Every structure is written in structure tokens, then in C-alpha cells.
Length: 99
Image (cartoon, rainbow, N blue to C red):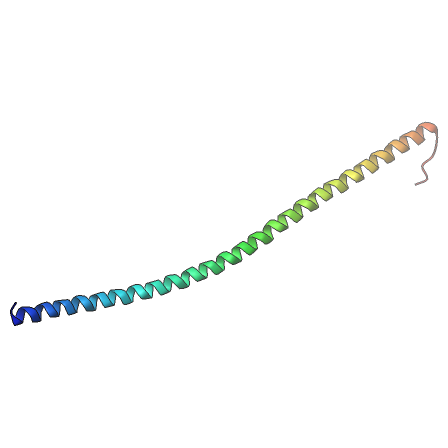
């Protein structure tokens, strides 16, 4: 190789090296952005999981309340039916209701 060819090849290698360094820098910046985004998404995911747990618990509570309300309504209905039967029995027997 001649001296000029060596110089030209050296310049080409330096240019390729500079481009490679630039590409590495760009990729490192992108990697940092992705790491930050990943951390942000992890935090958001944690918050959403907590909200999900709270909502599930709230749904369980509402379901239990509905069951208790239905049970309460059933008890009231049974008491009303019992009172009606008692009043019917009293009226058949000629007893006045004092209430």
C-alpha cells in the first residue's frame, strides 16, 4: 500500500469510528429514555394494581351489603307475613289488634 492509500483508509476508518461512536451515543440515550419509561410504567402499574385491589374489595363489600340487604328485606317480609297471619287469626277469632 502506498502512503496515500494508507492515509485514505485511515481517514475512512476514522469516519466509520466516529459514526459508530455517534450511533452508540444515540443508542445509549434511547436506552436511558426507555429505562425511565419502563420505571414510569412500573410505577403506574403498581398504582393501577392498588386501584384494582381497592375496586375489587369495594365490589365484594357492595355484594355483601346487597346480600345483607336482601336478607334484611327477606326478614322484614317474613315478619310482615307473620303479622298478617296473626292478624288474620285474630280477626277470625274475634280479637281486635291493639296496634
